Length: 147
Image 1 (cartoon, one colour):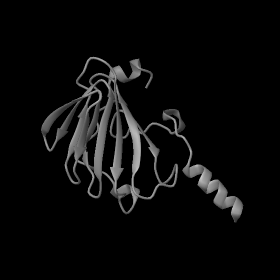
Image 2 (spheres, one colour):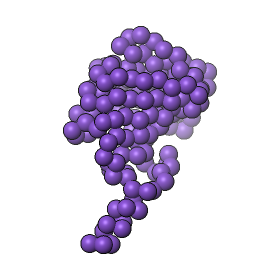
Image 3 (tube, rainbow, N blue to C red):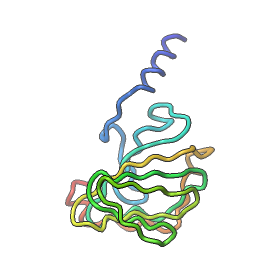
Image 4 (cartoon, rainbow, N blue to C red):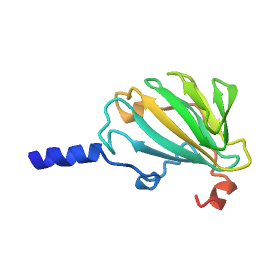
């Protein structure tokens, strides 16, 4: 039992890299959930990053249980909050309240990277996101950046 406990504790302190988890492209973009109950045993939220090529979009959705915190690391994103567009540039952040429909669009001329954190966790992963539009087909720009 002590060996199992030691392995669990080591996993909880693991440093995660963008390449450590597969891309989730279900809603568009190259989204990676890095810190989560599945990867490090978190119990109150999850965090990750998303990369978007110029013109690429993460389709509109909302989180019925969680607030989302976004920080743009590189580039410029347009974040639509219940249809109201906000421009968020590198080194800027945006809060997405629980239940607010939001979409992310790389409206800039170069790649964009954003870090996200959501809390609290939904009662189960499948309840964490509600899609409000269909995902567009991956853009030609995506294949140009190695997607």
